[in-house]
Length: 334
Image 1: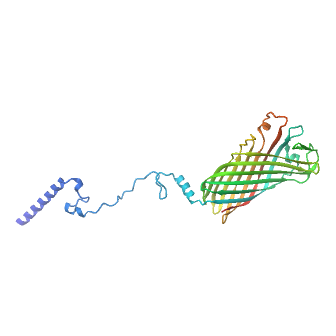
Image 2: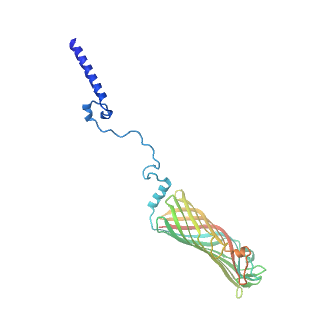
């Protein structure tokens, strides 16, 4: 009985001594698991904190830098995947193009007047044909340069002209002259575009350049009854853009436009062209184009439009037109 009491007393004394010693040690000297001091050497380094890290602004997963905008990151990723140089060649025919035009060409005089092509030259109101050629080269990841040339041809059969006759380019054809009239509309552009996006899903670019427009009228009624005159204007800078995005599969919807309103030599003139349609990928960089084309312009001068003062040697070079039609073609990117 005595030994048991002695052992119990000895155990209580050891426990009290350990508690007192633990209270004397600073908190930083204790083991993370509060083990006895002799076993603290066996402690392993603490593991990672299981709590999730606080959210950081701009962190959206792998591939996006801290603080970087998601849209800017997508554009930069698209730039890195572009292959340069790349070229595009397009050839399209314009069909079912309806046109309405009027012009006033020639020196100032009593017989020079505004000619409405359908009323006074009896050009038929039927669809006419034209074509368009485009070539561009992406020589840098961000920039491409290119040029286009388009022509719309309006031809009529031999008919009698209006009873008042025609006065064009200083020459006069009397009434009831029999012949064929024609209109030749030509537009050439040169452009530099900044490429924002260019991938399988979307193409987006815009830029500026220069544009040349020519309106030419001819009438051939035989010897002594020929008229031929034209008006042409240089524009610059122009504004143009291309927007294309995939609808489904290999079918893409696109919008392409050029607008010119600044003509240094002829204030008041403008030319506008707008194309809206579908592109279908055929493979190997080939695409089939189906589009609706709107083409309009005015080569008038402000003095002719608003009645400014004209000198004795003034020459009229006024022409305006509006055309709407379909377009079918092929595009090849390589």
